[in-house]
Length: 609
Ligand SMILES: Nc1ncnc2c1ncn2[C@@H]1O[C@H](COP(=O)(O)OP(=O)(O)O)[C@@H](O)[C@H]1O
Ligand SMILES: [Mg+2]
Image (cartoon, rainbow, N blue to C red; front, side, top):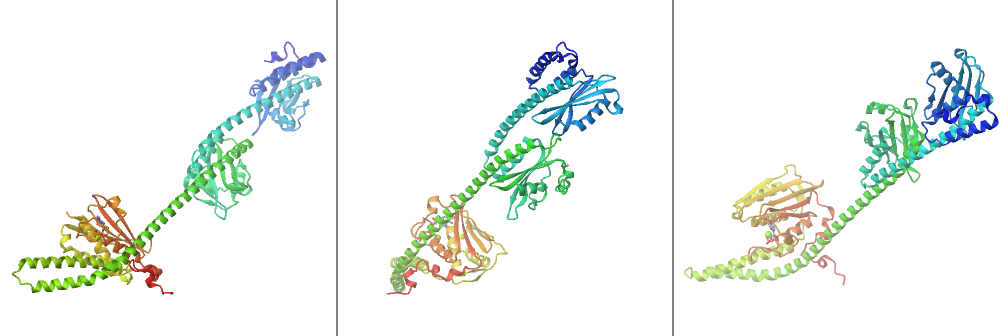
């Protein structure tokens, strides 16, 4: 290699005339200056300078992030040369000027002369070349010094170029990586996933062993451990007071913090290692900044190759953090929007329900009004019919069987009319809740006892699933009886071939509420009928069997108790009616709202005219 440069020459210092020197320098420049391989350059520079200066020994040292290192050395250098090198470097590295040392330390008397030439480019020292002459030889001449210095200048420039190129390549590769990573992070809109990906990517990007992602939370701006990688998860959720430790400093100052020896740093909180079992050596903490405020901190711990964190790591992580913040905000916004959307849908549903109830109420009110009028009108003639039919029946001689039978028929049908009229009246008369402490369990037990002996319940198994802790509630027991009696007879009607009727009570669904359920294993209700259930006179039962008023009455009573009634049904499987009632009746019960379905509003208002 040396031949390439100083072809045919021996010692440059001895013979060179200005022309030769120029030619010599030209060739050095051509050879070294064109090299862009940073690994090869030190060797090249060493061999060339040994030749130029006719030196016996030599080494090239380079400055790196972690101090200096020997980048090229002649093989025969021994311990004594290494010691010399250390001393010379310590003394001359900062001086940035060539130096001829003719009085090497006594211990190294075997050297007659040393030449130190720094590798400097743009006032930046990259390293240096040390050459030595052994035994009793002459000192290095100024021409030799000048030539080696020129060579060193070329070598430094080439080295610098090679490094810049390498950095550019590394940087562009990192950019590509960063790009790919960012794209992956952005691909998710779930905050937790994004947080996890941010930390994992940061660790991968910088080759860190472990890391933590903190988020600033609450008015105190505490730092919360949100995602932990590479150490115990016991830290999750723990909080650091604002401004404490290395991470806290990063958040409060908005500046990246590098600590390569945590044991020497006062801000380092040793307790954490004890908690995680990790041996922290170095930390890089970069704040996640949004609009001049830190929203979190990305902390990386220990590089995998055990090297230190450097400025270029900071630049890299800061670039990454910028993207991460955007991705995180994106996901947060998305979640926020979704939550709003859900709320909106809930509100819409609530509104719809309220509207339906309102319509139902209005309907009930007008039907109630009508029913009250009709029932009242019919009640009197009906009483007469019943009375006279009964009288007629009693006065008809027993042997007149046919007439007896006809009159019995009149009586039976008239009675049925009376039942309907009574239903109508109780539907229209739902105007008052006479509330009193009511033991719902006891009420149901009592009702079931009465039902069991009725014929329609013969094929029905009645199960009681009562919550014995059920509180006494404030309600109108008479009206509740009507409610459950209607629900139970509907259930029995739905199970003509028998089945199971379950009466259930429980607390909830919220504190202060109780729920009572009437469940059957009957024929069920079709979707279409589901919507009409509570409409007065809606019935699917044959003429003479149902009036279609049962559920309308129930609805009115439940509403007056400020309760809710819900139905779940599967055709062929069965039906469950669920009633929700308050333990204590809400205060506004006494207001106008308690007016019965059948009581027109104008009745209760003072007449202004
Ligand atoms: N447990 C039930 N199973 C099946 N259908 C039911 C049940 N309860 C009520 N229904 C349906 O609701 C309709 C209305 O009930 P309701 O208002 O009590 O009037 P009625 O019992 O006089 O028909 C019934 O005709 C029936 O179709
Ligand atoms: Mg009924």
